[in-house]
Length: 178
Image 1 (cartoon, rainbow, N blue to C red):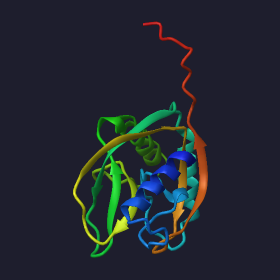
Image 2: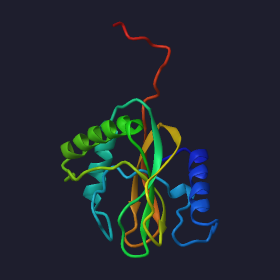
Image 3: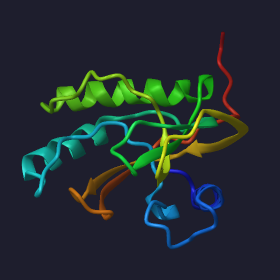
Image 4: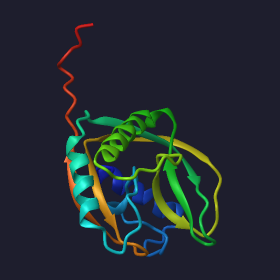
């Protein structure tokens, strides 16, 4: 999830792209902006064993905090009148892709089924009436200092945070002995 200041900035961009309409049904609130790494399934009620395994996998992750940089908007395919406009990027997301691979391994070791589907790191900003083209933008960056397990309610615009796990703070004072 982006830090609160970045999330507020992103929500403002989405509002402007949506025509300044704060109440627009396609806009996502700042506190809901996130990057989905691995969906664990579509459940009306998430099985307790799934949550237990996901939390156990999360506790095993030991990764330093890292920066992400998003530098383009693009529309994904969606159902008619409900096309996601997302923030995405290229090389500035390599550390995020590497983190996702570590998470995939931990989830698999915990006994959870993980998808091998193609992954495009992105933050959904809004759902629009139609697809837009791809647009380069000034880079938007933040430091990823934690990851979060979210229960997104099936068919609703609501989610609950199940758990948060901090990443190790990178120590810039230590030097490698290479």
